[in-house]
Length: 286
Ligand SMILES: NC(=O)c1ccc[n+]([C@@H]2O[C@H](COP(=O)([O-])OP(=O)(O)OC[C@H]3O[C@@H](n4cnc5c(N)ncnc54)[C@H](OP(=O)(O)O)[C@@H]3O)[C@@H](O)[C@H]2O)c1
Image (tube, rainbow, N blue to C red; front, side, top):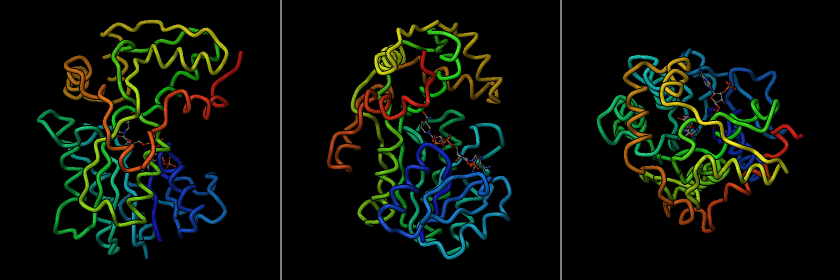
């Protein structure tokens, strides 16, 4: 049995679909199992990483697990959700673990790196005995879904850092890589830094989306102060906001096209245009 956490999310939902389609016994964890729509062959299970006791039932009898956390960096003294998930996996005797981390993971020494280092170590610690794989992707193409609300009322979208390029990745490619790591045993002890196939700015991504939707979409620039205020409203403490600003504005990390996704998948990673066509129905039409 493979347990997928974050099973209603962009990566997890696709992973559940892939595993179920391949005939793998799969259990999909969510805090809202009654509302969730999973493939008929997948078993829905309740689990909340903020409530470690709820995880024992979710992990019972599981041989492989996909672990992700939605806990925002710095909103607790340490990544308690990652720690709870890894501890539950160990207690249940899970053998194979794929963890969704983030580009550069625990490398470096800012509050984000320190948080990710603890989160990754919870899985890679040899004492846990997992056969692990770390996925470290940069920006997700699905972040463009955040524009959908603004596109309901007009053709302008306020986007911070709209001219900073990133080689964003399709979460479906991450799901496919996770499925390979969970089912083949060929990716044990691997740390995969992952990107999509093209480096595009959000302004360029918006133009591609506009073509797909048949709309002339424009960026409304967001000042640095307004971007900082938005992050604070999201719950990030000031030192994490500073770290995000430094990571976004200094250097070009995240903009390189990395070879790993294509190597692991044996085909080119999906483009933003393909993602936009696949998700067009999630955006309002004129
Ligand atoms: N977006 C990016 O650009 C980017 C880049 C690099 C890495 N990442 C990483 O990717 C992950 C996000 O993946 P995603 O986009 O697939 O997720 P997502 O679509 O944002 O969905 C979040 C998932 O987290 C689950 N969740 C929320 N709170 C939970 C809790 N207390 N206990 C258990 N599950 C909980 C939700 O499940 P329910 O609500 O159904 O319970 C949902 O399935 C994060 O770890 C992020 O750091 C993202």
